[in-house]
Length: 389
Image 1 (cartoon, rainbow, N blue to C red):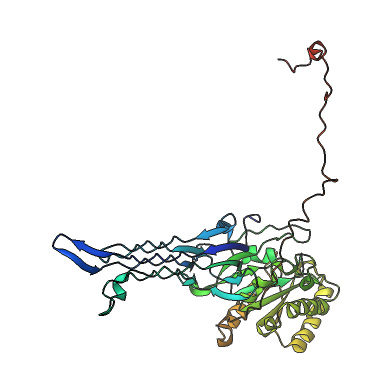
Image 2 (image 1 turned 90 degrees about the vertical axis):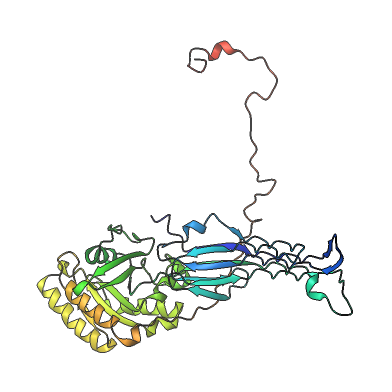
């Protein structure tokens, strides 16, 4: 599943060019000078983006790097219009952001199921000579050509849509919590960076209500500069309405780890700090009674210092899970957390240097063949070892 999660694709798109208008003069048995009757050319096909909630990755576009619509047909006589080019619809998951593939500038985003955005318009068809007839020019012998096609390199980035995003260091218990509160089955192990792709889970709440949680791969200090998994998955946090920070109770300094996580989000996008935040201290089942009392005192100070709800939970024993769901649902119902609007900054487009991967002539390995010199082969010495059976 990790290999199939594709959230970044660069493709080349080209719309259809418009068909040429027809230059034709009508002729009939009893109408030798019928006048111009050339029809218009057809419109070229559009390149259209369409949101599809049944898709969760850009895998279907990974090997489809060239997407081109068809051209419009030429006009005909008797004012026959040319056929319109066939539109090319690119279905993408909800939450896909489109950037210019050459400059990195933001173009548009698709957030709703069924939403359609014309990315590249097809060229308009040319007018036939029937449009250019006048009292002084009754037989125009010219028509318009169709408009040329539009072409563009685009970058599609997927930013998953979820109500709650789990933010924490590797092995903070994010995947374990997701597996407990939802039906998702993320990989769980006792080594860092177990989760390599964002995992989504639907949490069933009271009265058949539900909300969506996204397990974002672990963030470490320096992630905004490219350390660990780097910036690859930080963009998925931008879509979340509430951020649930998770710090293990066994951490040496809970407050310091929380500050590091905040700092990395601020370096990536300062707008993330305006989102609602919760802090969950995980793995409370590993604490002794004395350690638990000490942690609870620290939590009271953290709650006052950072002005955010802090809760002690254990995904293994179930302690605090119900209270955590109540806190999340309460934050999601607040009016300021209903609308998720983010500003998409231009991205850095890195051009691949194909020449760097080509070895020099001196470094090219040479194939050496055995028995290059002309000699008589003594086949008898190879018999009996199975090669001739």
